[in-house]
Image (tube, rainbow, N blue to C red; front, side, top):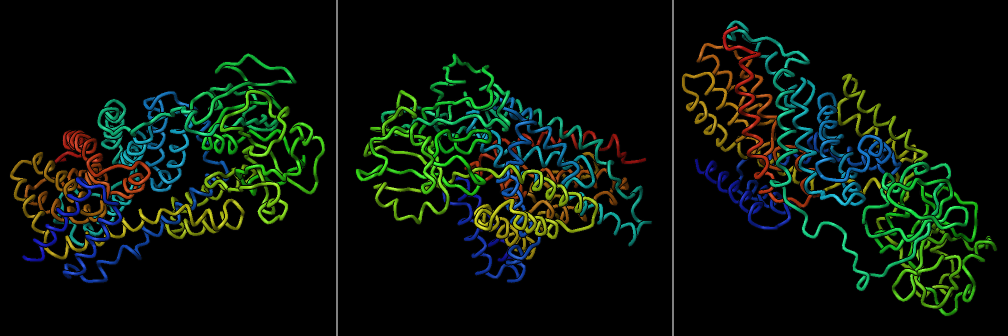
Length: 600
């Protein structure tokens, strides 16, 4: 009894800290797990099981898969074609949510969400959208889509397996029970998904938090602005696109100054179509310059050497021209013609006195104190000549050119991973690890990118949450909750169904969704048997209720995956997740008996 009260107190403290403080979630969960270990509320092996759990390791590998897809530009190319450049959060949700829900009905939703996180990050920057109104909807859409088929979520498969086992062990005591087919859930799951997505589309603008200060504010007095000049790659994806379609008209730390085509300056607007070798001049701050440099289809105009190697190996650096620079007094346009074979740099942008120049860079005369952005190779950092030419050299982190020549390879690797899991040839963990290794061996990403891509804080939170689940079960708290819910069921099958759904939601908030389903299943079976009705509506309700984990970030792994990037609080999930759960519950309780009658 003491163990149960201690567990309840630790859970209350955990949720209180998550809701009312800004402590890092990883610190809160590790602290809660430490308390359960200290008070020995569960066996040590059970408390630490999350750190060796295949699901946790799988998510870590999937982060690397997403990094490989992103670093090759595969995700960017796909998102440009499927999503484009939405002008509002509503339009972005309208394009993203149904696609994710459909994909999650047939594929594991974890890799889908992992790959969409960087897409939403880039969309929010390039289209000036509030990412906090996209991350939670992304997770919820993937969860809703998983309710449509038997293979949509692990919860469905677990419950289907338990039904099969129950039929083998004592089918005569289970009236009207039968194995669950692939699309049996669709009759309930599809209406639930459609209603859930509609709810998100029309309420998230009010129920989800807004990013403070979202939108780009051009404050040229406080920021250094560069004149960045880039040309349209004649073989790149921007040829034939308008400025708006290319994402170059939305404020993102830069604005277009001019467009030059065949030595003539164009009048331009959002509908201006880009042609090969157009030279676009921008006024950009440092973040905007990094974004422009990494844009697929744009290349630097001026270089000391024309023949370029693979650009994905290059770096962007910020340098200050010293008074001993060998190029002092020379015109930038003349340097490009000289082609210094020893000194390989490509000029991206330049600032003088903290401002962007109002004339073409080719006419600029290099002066001491000029600040330049250069694209360089690795060898640049080890040349003694730099110590003379530049008084300051700073490598800009977070800027990387995507290796688009490997986009097809990365896509095929990811597709092979999904197919092998869907067909049952490999486990998700095995397939993800093999795919991550293939990404490294094929050059789709390097070891540094792979290591940085893994969100270790999220993995630790998931592992700690699994440890807390062990304490809930071992202390007897879960049994007390189950008995209380069973007593609420009464003699009405509909009330019993509502209680089962409520129990799933309640347990989801404390343990993982799969654990919730496993815990509620026998209780639901007992209730159906006691009422003398078919167990099938109860089984479907358990599948939907345990899968639809909206209220707590810890109840579903995709919620945790967006928790950090969206900088959400626990209360943000409750605010939109609670009414969504009630809506899903109402539809489930009303529709399930229609397609799965209590008395067939």
